[in-house]
Amino acid sequence: MELIVLLFAVTLLHSEGSSAVTPVFVKKGGDVLLEVINADGLKDFLFIEWNFKKTAILVRFAHGRDPVVSLNYTGRLKFPVKNYSVNLKNLQHIDSGVYTARVSRLEGDQTLAEYKVTVQDPVSPVDLTVDSVFNSSNPCNVTVTCRTQDFYINSTFTCDTKTCSQEGGEQSKVTTSGASLQVYLDLNDSIICNHSNQVSRTEDIKMIEKFCLKHDDPEQHSNNATVPVVVIVVLVIILLPIAVVLFLYYRKRRKDKNESMENTVYEIPQIAATAHPPDQRPTRDVSELSSTYCTVGPHTGTVRSTETRDTTLPESLYAQVEKSAKPLKK
Image (cartoon, rainbow, N blue to C red; front, side, top):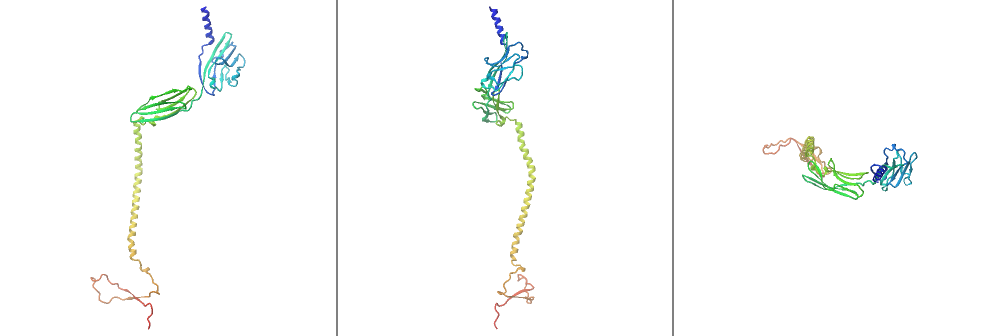
């Protein structure tokens, strides 16, 4: 009796086969290829059948005949290769489950392939924000928030003069949809906020060097500090001669202008002293005044000493004799 039970168990194990279930993840609205491996060696079988959750039949292949597709999957199945593999199109969440390919023979059934298909939505965008920065001489602490539409995690990063590390807060969280929300530091010292599942991925990145300046190489800071000094020296060398030339030019121009002004001031009294030059003596109306000019000869009288006179007399004098405005009556 025990021998009969053992033989039945071995037969049942052989009929079920030993193939493992293969997990497959598909984006909602996408397609999935369900393959049968080593189907070329299949002979002497009644039919090969794909079913869903071991109850719903997708398609049945009879030996030497065209495949027969179930009404529920008409228009959704393609057969890219002739090895009993199927391509299931436009998957939705209700299509998640186990798909099994079985071969039926007279001696029993055997599992050829088995896939556990999971249909997932693409993940939502993610946003990484810096909440606070404590940048002292050593160390520098940065607190960030990695956020999706419905979930968020906080984390703190610490940097010294050489390295950065993730010190506090949450590093990851699994959402209700099975997606993973993570915040971490990569090899380039960039903070990465990652939202992903098996079919999609979104991320946001912040460079930690923008917040922790002390993390930079001190030698690099020294080199960067010398750049403005070099620029200033070059500018001085170029601009100093130009400034000197401009200074001398404007100085000479100002000096010439001052000299011109001084000459003008000294000439004013000379012009005033000769308000009526000889060639521009004012004339009077003849009707008002009639003058007769006569020349008086040299002085024949006694000449006074030059000590008692301020000026010498001219050789000739002009004497003006005014005529009477009215003629004399006889």
